[in-house]
Amino acid sequence: ALSLVFGAAEAFLLFGVMQAYLSRTTSAHLRLGPWEVPVSGIMVLAVILIPEFITLARQMVAGYPFLAAATLVKVLCTCMVTLASSYWFERSRSITSPAIALGMAVGLGPLIRHAMYVWFR
Image (cartoon, rainbow, N blue to C red; front, top):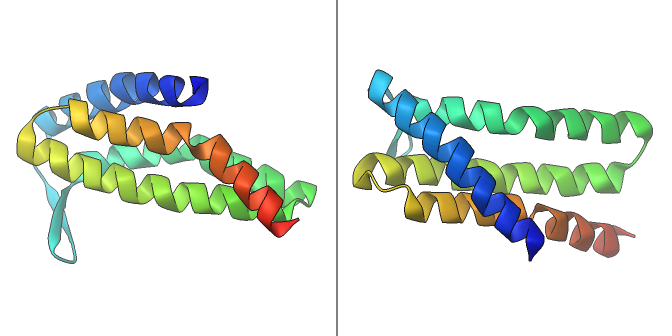
């Protein structure tokens, strides 16, 4: 529960501030299938994924393939939620729903890792 609260708080601060600022400064979009995802959302995604890729690299070097697989699943979930959230933010200009969705994706990370560790053990 604490992880979910921390994830939501982090999402409100990180996603809200960065997405709002970047969407005001740039209006470029990138077409991904039927979606036109704002470039500002892709920049936010890149910032969010930096620590995840560092964690993934450390787990692979340390020889923990199961934890690396769990981190990769979490990274893919975070990518989908962040891009969908930036698309939603661009349309609605409301930070509430995207930040809660992103916070849940961040907050559920430890649960996803634990489930993958138990499943692949």
